[in-house]
Amino acid sequence: MTTQQVVSKIQIQKVKIPKELLTLSPLEKPQVKNELDILNAYSLLFYKYKQCEIQINKIRELNED
Image (cartoon, rainbow, N blue to C red):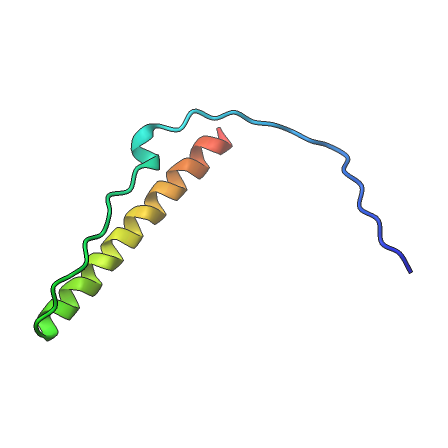
């Protein structure tokens, strides 16, 4: 049995994405001395993750328009 794939439609979309949506500020290595520092580091990491998620969603919205 053989399987074939057929491409029926190709569409190219050009979308202007604002530079701020493509820019991520680097994460600095946390200085951890105690448990509170560990919690703060995880909190910052989660905050940065959510920022990325928001930017990705904004880019997706631009592609839908």
